[in-house]
Length: 226
Image 1 (cartoon, one colour):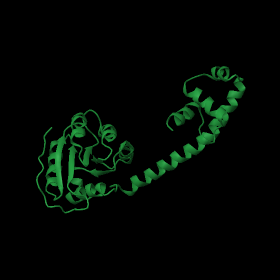
Image 2 (cartoon, one colour; image 1 turned 120 degrees about the vertical axis):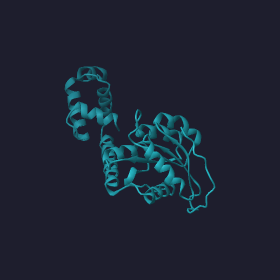
Image 3 (cartoon, one colour; image 1 turned 90 degrees about the horizontal axis):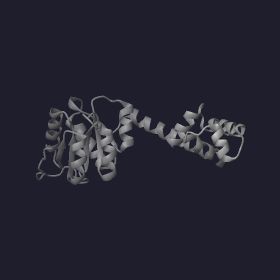
Image 4 (cartoon, one colour; image 1 turned 90 degrees about the vertical axis):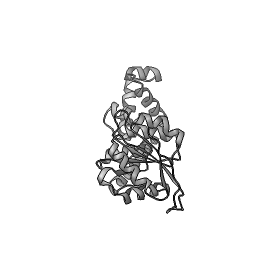
């Protein structure tokens, strides 16, 4: 890991103060370009840079930067997994993902892991876009496009629908679903609850209807992923 020393700057963004940034990027040219662009900006200072998620996990918690620019596609552990682990240690740090393509699914997974937004890296991102994204994150915003924002809305609508469906289950149906999730057969569930197999089949039919699924596997997946 190469440490970048801070230097005094005249702040252009007094509302956020001096912004301390770490860069995690395995491509040395992209990493050096980012460092150069950020250190040229008054009010920004790059306090560390890292070639791998493993190095970032070891060093960044000691530094506690304000913002981390995190490459998604790192050599071993992915940037998404790295953010998920770092966010639990550094809840006040803002993570912005670096990606080559606007892959909505990958970016969305990054947001679920704790990132606040993303940047297209390399020549795709201008210096102004990088600066704006960092300042936006520091001010509580999220550097996103409309496609990603729509995906977030759809996700939470789906989550809400799942939660409402599960709340419609009776106490007995919850018990049956819990036993289904443990891999028990209908007969074993019937014996455990002191009812007939036909009663368990009826409960399962009701569970499938309420959760809007068509199989035991789908019901268990939805239950375990709630």
